[in-house]
Length: 150
Image 1 (cartoon, rainbow, N blue to C red):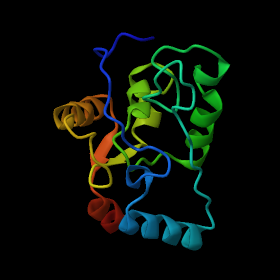
Image 2 (cartoon, helix red, strand yellow; image 1 turned 135 degrees about the horizontal axis):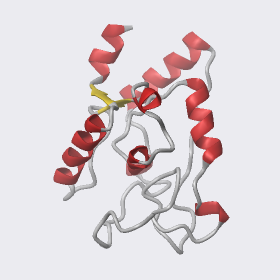
Image 3 (cartoon, rainbow, N blue to C red; image 1 turned 180 degrees about the vertical axis):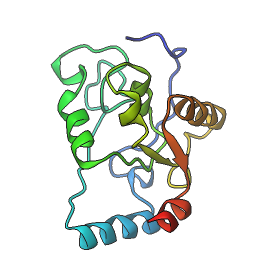
Image 4 (cartoon, helix red, strand yellow; image 1 turned 60 degrees about the vertical axis):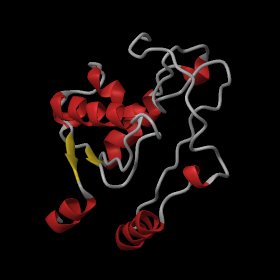
């Protein structure tokens, strides 16, 4: 399960209560408009709550150390039911390389590359991530293109 990444100590980022944890106003406004227009509910998922392992992914820790860090099938099934959409370049989508999610499901996922940013100093890894996701069958685009298409 682990071993995909060289061990490093990440700079603190996206800490609860910090500006890095927040959603930028334009994305937050769009999310709220979607809720009003569709009656949908946004499900916020916390990760990294277990201090004994990393949680690049909300789906599964790089090295699971207990039930709360193992593969989160409920989250996967919830996302599949409501339709995939992802505004962030985060590690949960790395799980898509695994056979858990079929090619047809991956094609429903859209990564909005202009709605998130890489951890400072890891911009190159962010670009590699986007290429890997496209190669895995995930759609990568911009919020403008997505909303023009609807």
